[in-house]
Length: 276
Length: 294
Image: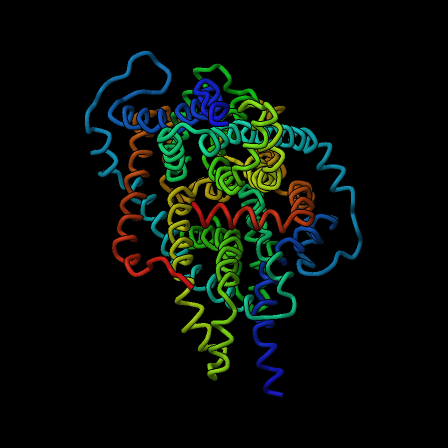
């Protein structure tokens, strides 16, 4: 008996922690199908007595969650793809091309970027974006998001490219390929696994970004999901059932991505942070 | 073969786009921040007035600024002394269980992939005085409703709890990865020598993961210094400025109140404080954590 107890003690502690992590989600999920504040107040912990799915319809229509959703989606995808493209070109140049000490100098310069707390740079970036006359357009987010992701992306991709054997290039040169061809036809296809990891990490970062999205856009039609949700909460403060439906909308895509790709996400984050 | 990969023109074309963005969005902003921190400017007009150290004197004598510094301090203390021990404790537990390991690892990480803004909203609802989860739970024990986010005594704590809820799992996964990469022979050898699970955890695993714990602490400090969105979403710095942090104070001045020069002074101070705290940490605690070879 004491032996089984000893074995189950860690599980008791861990399940307790799991409850703390998951219960807020359940609370919101349940609240989102309850009739109104009153039925939430009377039964805050339990499964709803009747299911009111109208909250979801109201949130989608009234709060324009669909607009925010697609804004977020295309900004995040575009910015992540471009930063991977630019970073992989850079990483290829400094890891595979032979430019002596320039390789090291440029790479270390970009490494410094990892040490800079980037939201302290928000004010100058605000001014740059205003001077480029892209304030209050989606470019005000896309370009800074691309730039922000570059140091981390370069570090991960460069580490991966360095590990590729140099024989493949020799063979490629024999076949008459020049540097751009080697990059596009040989190195990029081989780097795809690392790119997928970096894409997910960058995508989630952009999808969740709040500060720039909140201050660089003032037109409601342009807003991204996190900012739209905060707006929505401020407007519908008193209707918690509907607000919960809104939260479910904004959390659901991330949970789905996570469920499918969790191994990759965790792998990417551990790789990035241990090196950073 | 060497010729193809030595083409300087191609090299330049490949590094220029990323390098340009890097200079425009990292290097230039640093110098721009430093420059404007010595000026009085509203961010829009044509006249930029050089004011020397005035802004810095003003900040150091600004009580509300010091409240924000103190709140960043709370973030650091809470993560280092409450979160980190929990992270280590739960990582060790997860590493040593055989069943459900995958479930624990996957579930604990989930809050970290969510938008901080949405987490702020979600927890705002949990802290809601009348129908929120916390007060309902306390109500079961007969505790009067607490106004978590609008009471100066509890607002900061409420934010710290939410922040910990969001990030603990993220660090657990990092520490877990380090623990699982320790060769199992070490543990097995100790087990054969009769060491208990607790002894193995504290005498073998723990010393070996000191470097990663150090990384976690550094990352928490960096995270604490730049905390902003969670505060903006949950309390907007209130009640009465009691949850203001340096980054929100900076934004409030520069963007909302058009004191662009002073805002940049605060940005520079965020840099300086972060550097000082990290350097102090490295000097005081990080001497012993040399690289560990198995």
